[in-house]
Amino acid sequence: MSDVDEVGAVPLVSGADVEAAARLLEGVVRRTPLEHSRALAERVGGPVWLKCENLQRGGSFKIRGAYTRISRLSLEERARGVVAASAGNHAQGVALAARELGTQATVFMPQSAPLPKVAATRGYGADARLVGATLTEALAAAIDLAAETGKVFIHPFDHPDVIAGQGTVGLELLDQCPDVATVVVCTGGGGLVSGIAAAVRDRRPGVRVVAVQAASAAAFPASLAAGHPVPLTAMSTMADGIAVAAPGDLTLAHVAGLVDEVRTVSEADLSRALLFCLERAKLVVEPAGVAAVAAVLADPAAFAPPVVAVVSGGNIDPLLMLKVVQHGMAAAGRYLNLRVHVPDRPGSLAALLQELAGLQANVLTVEHERTTAQLDLGEVEVAVHLETRGPDHAREVLAALVAAGYPVRTD
Image (cartoon, rainbow, N blue to C red; front, side, top):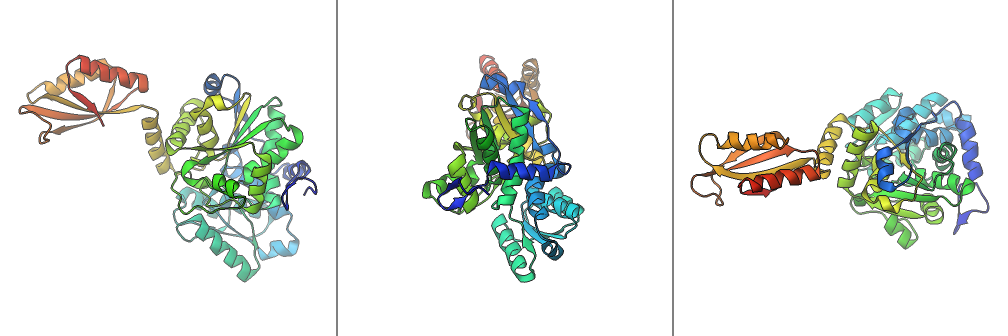
């Protein structure tokens, strides 16, 4: 590590450290593609590229840091085995790296960890144990096992080797997009953004680096303000991969010293971005992995092009994907819930549905209500759940129904 670059008493990972990790990872990790997004470019007003770490081995960038850390253990340490804690992606990265390097991995995961991530971790040969309701509890169990058995604890983000390994994403994107002006990075504990910032600052110090957290699991703002890690008392986000209660001392120092800005995105922003990646980029991305894209979609004017948004992972439970897609459809204005009063006589419902058909609104569900106090005698309320082409179409449908004389209200 560098003897010069430091914030306070914490030495930072240097560009040379990241370069060394890149040499170590040659032939181990995939050089993931950089895909241009025309739809994002139109919003930003210049080129926007997606760094597709969702296509990495193990489904995320985590193999980079895990392999770098484990490969530098002594033979005696590897013989004892390694232990880790993770909501899923670090678990798979450690399990895969351990298998490649011939050591046994034990991984603690929260009981709420997505089943595909648990299955994949076990599929790589790790002993995956479900413990506690949160990652914090899983981390405590992993640290206890390391102390009891002598297994080496592989931290998910707060170690120089892990940060250097994750930083190789930054080296790749600089090679792939030499004129990049802004790099946007999904951020939980901060290992990825710390490593990328170290690489970028060394090669291209003028490039702006932006960290993005889920608003309901954003530990960095308060920690940066306090100057030390401040644990969150509660978290609630679909983005389990970046739901980290507090940064580490090392990642906090990197973000404070090397990262230009920390932004947050809402749950609606995340679901909208996941749907965007599916529809427009043809990429399967998990909620945590799409945070950078969510930030660009939410405030495109804030990012000077050319922009590279790091898509950090694609390990998503299909059931969660279904829920998030539905949430994203609603957030994007693709669903419209209406309550329409019609005469309680034969043909009224058919007339309403014919009106909607003429407006090219797809009816998903219909319900009748005859007993509300808001109804006049001889009226029925029809609750209609519609699929539209977007907010403009939704407004068109609503205006047309009102113009046709229907009393309408939206949910």
